[in-house]
Length: 57
Image (cartoon, rainbow, N blue to C red; front, side):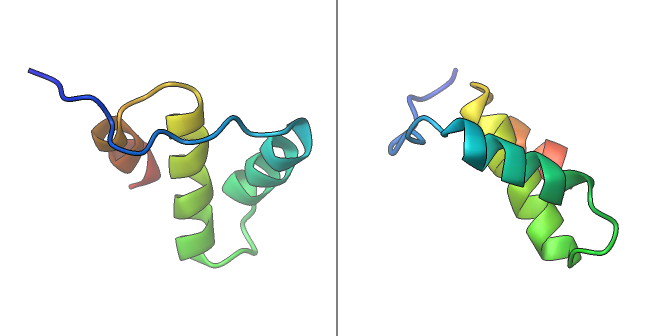
């Protein structure tokens, strides 16, 4: 049984998506930044918080 997300993420702008995508693929960024970027992109694409956490590692 899934619950509704309490605070859904606001829609990301194209610029924000571009920056988050760049960070999520970067090898020189701190791992915490990469994980957060991956999680934000996953939630923005409609995945649950649990699924986003799995994607982020």
